[in-house]
Length: 331
Image (cartoon, rainbow, N blue to C red; front, top):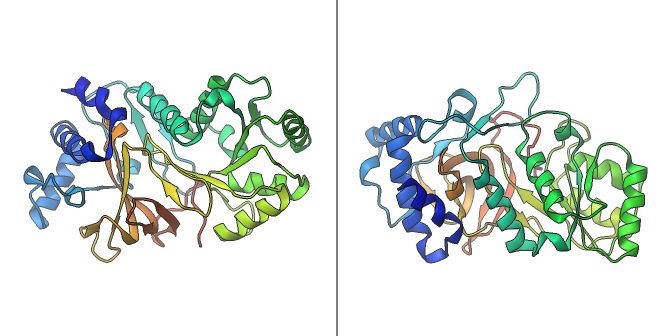
C-alpha cells in the first residue's frame, strides 16, 4: 500500500484529491502514533476518527503544527535521511521534521517549480539567503541548492553579503536577456534593493518571508512596493513553505498563493479550531499529500484568507504562536 500511495502523489488531479487524502489519512492513522492519539482525542470530544467523512476534506483531523516542536512526527518507523529544522531564536524551541525519503521532497519542489515556472534549465537561479546559509538543516536552502544544480547555468549560486558582486551578476544576466530567479529572504532583498537599485526586465524577484528582527517590520504591501520601485520589476513573487511540509505554494504577485495539485489549503475558525471550511478568513490548515511519512494534515499558526478557487493569502501569525525566523509579513 505504501508504494502505491507514494507513486500516485504527484499525478494527483482535482477530481481525485479527496480519495488520495482519505487513503493517506487512513495510512497515517494506522502508522503515525502521535497523529492517531490526536485523532482519538478529537473523537472523544467531537468526532470519530475512524469514521471520518471521506467526502469532506473539512472533516479530517488536523495536527497542530506546534507538535513538531515537542514530538517526533513520523508515519512508520524509520531512520531519517534528513532532519529539517526551523529557524528561530535562542529563546524558542525549533520544529524538527524527520524525512524518511528525501526524494519525495525533491520531486515535490522540482515538479511544482516546473508547473508554475516551466523548465528549470531555462532559468538562472540565484539565492540570497544569508541567515539560512549560516545554519544547518534548512529545507529552503536544500530546495534552492537543488534548483541551482538542476539549472546548470554558470552564474547560478548563493550570495551572502557581497551585494556588489550580486549586482554585477544580475546586470550581466540582464544584458544576455537571461531569465533569472532571485530568491531571497525578505530582509536581505530589502538590504540589497536599498544599496543597489536596478531596473530588471528579465529577473523574477521571489521573497520567502523573514524579517527576523533585522529591520523595521513592514506590511507585505510596503515590502513589495519598495522592492518593485528599487529593482524595477512589475511584480514580486513569493514562496509559501515551511519546515513541517514537503510542498510549497507560489504567488506571482499581490500575495495570492496557488498550490500544486497535491497540496490544498483550508481555513479554520480562530475561536473554534474544529470548525473547518473550504474558504473564508481564519487560520490556515494545510493538506500536503507529499508529507506521507510525517503528517499530511497540519493546522498552522498562519492567519489568512482562502478564496473559493483554492488560492489564498497569508496575513500573519496568531498572536500566541512562537516567533520564527521565517515568519511571514503582516498586512
